Image 1 (cartoon, rainbow, N blue to C red):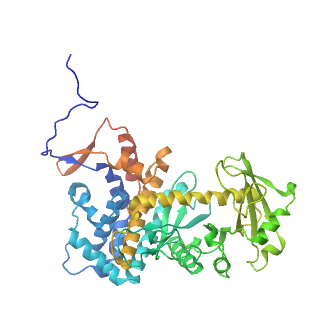
Image 2 (tube, rainbow, N blue to C red; image 1 turned 135 degrees about the horizontal axis):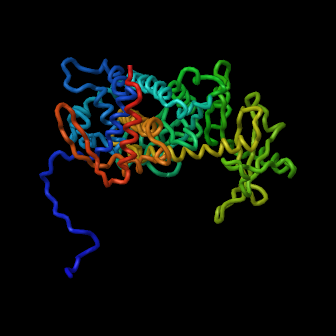
Length: 458
């Protein structure tokens, strides 16, 4: 018997293969772009920046950058992975052309940002209509989560400063529409800020909310059907007053800092007033209770505000804070939702933790690093990241089912987008033949079949 060497079979490698397509599973993203009309909308929006006799359309360049980012790229040069596969991605601009476009859009400033955001808003409205019962507004309410994220800088970049965590970089503020337990989420706003920007700056929260609301269908841009959900950074007088101002009337669920006044009020709550917290399935959450505060603690806050405090046994090893009481970890949040049980409101606010999942997905999709020097350029990069995250949210919403519906970007890349295929040309048709032994080939083909039956844009 011949003795084997090593744990893996030896393979001879040659570099002259033909008709083989890498990242063939990315055809899912390409088809999502086509069916949603994203490429047409972005091209129309960027028409003012298309030079006469230009070879490459600015909209196509921007969408190509978003596709490269969705596939795991983290800089402009990573568009080269698309350029290597013209059979799938078409003609892709050179690196200098890509850089010039980003510089041009950065120089245009707010005009370019407004154009890109308007195109995304238009496409989002159509995507939600296509999604039907899978759309985030299918139950009549839209939840927008706002959260900050620290992006470290390892070189000297504009507005990179010391952060509140004593690191160095930027402190963007992001907003995401929550898709609920059965889905992921999609970005609706990104505000690039210096690293020294505060966590609870009301002006920044108002600005990010304005941009986020403009991304929603018209009927959700005001009124109680839209819920703005934040951590304690959003629990400020100015921000809550703005949310509830006449003509806006938005719902909110905002974390609140445990002040001495709130702490003393909690100590006076009688035991029967505490309601057991619940899990999403309706079962009792062990070791957690919620109660509503009233009286002087609401003075000066918007009319109709409810202040709810939660106590829970700390996890093993967790250290209590001086604002905690009786060995329990205390947290509080404010809401203006009426006629809803305290336990249900507490569960809804606790589900804001899904925003951390969205931040993790954004870090894995270009937000780990801001690759350019100028802030205006990096703001364009932030818009590209959001387009990539849009595609990574719209694809599952329109075409994936089961557990694949909640896969995060890294898993989508590993199992679906990285699949290789053989390119076959027959007559006037080009066919991608995916490997039959790949475990997720059926997921790809089924998703493509669902996208195929959707109506074409326009």
